[in-house]
Image 1 (cartoon, one colour):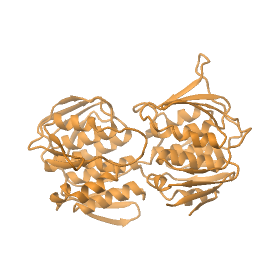
Image 2 (tube, helix red, strand yellow; image 1 turned 90 degrees about the vertical axis):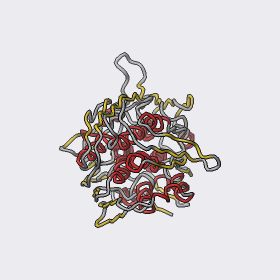
Image 3 (cartoon, helix red, strand yellow; image 1 turned 30 degrees about the horizontal axis):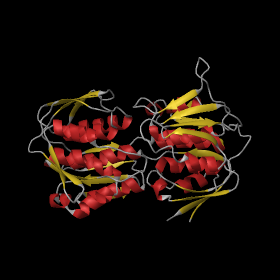
Image 4 (cartoon, one colour; image 1 turned 120 degrees about the horizontal axis):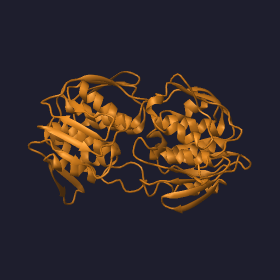
Length: 434
């Protein structure tokens, strides 16, 4: 198990460019299964979750090439459909959360899919009911296979329909869209997720010949087509990585520029940091965060304590609450964080408390941070990364801490952040991988 050794207290300065979006990559790579023609995707991040998904597609027969860094071509013209129900395939899916995104394309094009309980972050229950209910409304049947802990989905013929999703699930919406693009008739999805990555998926599918309207809203209409063709697609910058860099710049930065951040696709993220007192300057499509000797948390207009809570897009993404929480530990003032979506995601704060942070964990979903105003630095510590986002939050804490910290289980960080230690060391950090 690899470990990061971080010597805290070194200021970061310079330019950094965010990688391609991990969550978008998982969706659009799976969408290549919908056609037998070549699809080229660029700005693909070199991270574990994406690499493992690409390997899984190769295993089922997708022809994959990597002509240059960040560029992949996919051609799903001769798939081994029998492999899809094998124990080996099920085992691979169970280790990769992103494998769930294969269900919709396989069901839509071939009429069958096998689903194992997917792996990924240990951040609480992540149910698949929205996916299954959507597939069922389109005409698919599913059954649990006793003794294998898998579900088999089959559909002789998918037919469009109206559906109201029980939650605005991002992966659920993406999966249902991919299943519906070649269904007979018209599918209307209400309470659909509308994140930029869903929009990107829809635009890509339309270039492949799909007929999707309502893109960017929570009411998506899909008129089924007979077949899809190849296309080229470029991933957006990863908004979670942009937010992570803003946090680092606030905590230990001496002037950091985030290049080509795709500001219009960041939604409320910059304003969430501004509510913690962080100055963010927009220059073209770059974000510049100057050095912060102090920063003060806002209050609401009526004077009550600031609350930051996750919400479906265009609300604040839950993936950034962990790093926002770390930033708050050195602010002036107090803030309540309300993590609504996952019941285990705030448990990493006990590690921050060990480092000297003043945090009250109210319950699995809420934590109050009382900022130190930089009067007390966090202490170095030995830690283990429980998930991707908590892992990067702990790394940010270690960069600002007094002394040398160690973070184990960094494979969790590698799942979402490409070559992170080299990129941060280029800005002045002292991080060693062991």
